[in-house]
Length: 341
Image 1 (cartoon, rainbow, N blue to C red):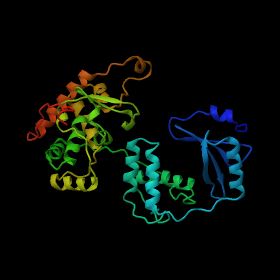
Image 2: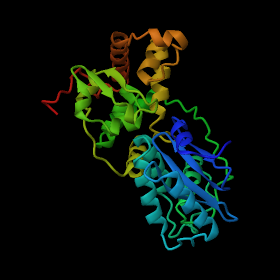
Image 3: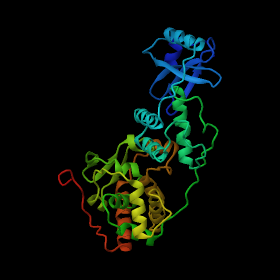
Image 4: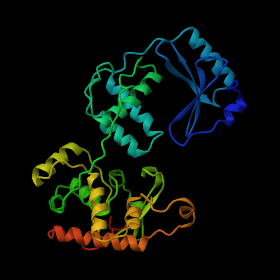
């Protein structure tokens, strides 16, 4: 690679996800890091290959950034070790909120929340939860870049996420759907009746409703694209939620229903498998789940049919199925509008 210039930096592509480092061969350790939204100068130095961000291009010029990098390489700055784990965790999540999807920030939050360390050095090194391992790996890399610590104890730990194959039974779903302790019970019902992800339901806003449709914006979707589904019987309990205490609420529902060894995401698997049992075509179920994997290539470009009528019929059929499982649960069609909130 040739030496970095203002023109070459301008022409460097921004990746859709993650970050890419481009090093300047004329100054070892110095380079530009490109992310989806920005390009920033950095320098790596010391035996631990510490990384310091110098500034964002073009707010700072290449000439000034290179001068700063030379000074850092000559006289490395001392580490800042007086930051507590709570302070670092809060700062990390705030930074993540400016550049990542809300669902990702939420996952990081719940992975870091149970850790009760007072300092960064006090974070347990033997955690085995794959989600915590993946989060801590990114967290400590962030801390190293900001000179809060020298090493990442989870750098070489592999986060092996086991694919869940747990399928809730009809009897278990009936007991969970009959449970009443709002707002958690309403969230459970909505996840079951719609097959959507938790981030879509807990972040729901009334303005996403347009007539008898609900459109979830791309910012909260895992796919990164907006997602529209028909508003059917579940609309009677769809609302803007303000909720905390997930672990306590889950323990409470397990204690009252006797249903154990499940997570909220299991409702999507139950939704999909039950739709198959009811004879709903796979492409309709995939459209409801926002998988859309059945139409690819050229067909995906030209086929813009949204299957909304078929999706409405499928949701109504699924709602009747659940109603038959839990007769005490009223499932009458009742659309939620802005007027009745």
